[in-house]
Image (cartoon, rainbow, N blue to C red):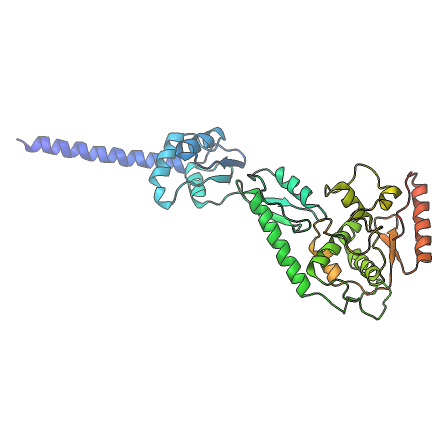
Length: 352
């Protein structure tokens, strides 16, 4: 007679197991069902949020509909790894199961920050200070010219100091490669300028001097094809013991590295002596005046062969070059005429 209660208990237990299996199947179907997102959305999961905080954030972002089920599933699938902090891009209709797997993989959104050529270190750091997703302050500020202008990838939560360290290392490696591959006494020839048949002397004796001159070339022209030619002009001036007479160096000195002046450069500025005034002082400035790009470095270390000593704006965004002061003065007069025709009330660039 005791067999019947045992049989009944077994039946109830079997029904219970069947119910659990059915519930698990239903839960799995719900986990793998398309989510409510109508369009892709990025969600930032902060460090230390925990499964409850993550579930709440995903619910608020519209990624999931059942935070309790999400937490239970994350716990059950924990062997595949924890839910990692970071910024994630959830595609439309991401299922809760797919969201868990994405966060376990750690495939966070890859962000980008571009540091343009010609910025000072102060300007580059100011740009990073405004870059969304980076954290912390920059505790160690590099020397001027020591950050390589480039596009850098990062993830939400990366440190600003970490980006600066990467930029500094990139410049160190780029400068070392450029210096090792320098033309030395055999500058590059081109059919776009008169050839002297000679060689630019080794007036640039160190990589640091090359970096300083490259920063001047970077600021003097935004036309890529002109950089080797502008570099040759300055190298020829150094060879002839002429002053560089570069406006950007004066501006840097007056602006204290901020990158510019709130007014136009005046003739009086060119006569005001300071370490960066290449009108009053011979040779290179004491430091770079900006962060030069790879092309400017290559231009300085592989310049065009040229006898030119002067250049002035041509009115179209580029420059016109000259070998003699007489020819240069004619170019300056032509530039003055262009300015007058445009109705600009400013003086032409001083002779270089």
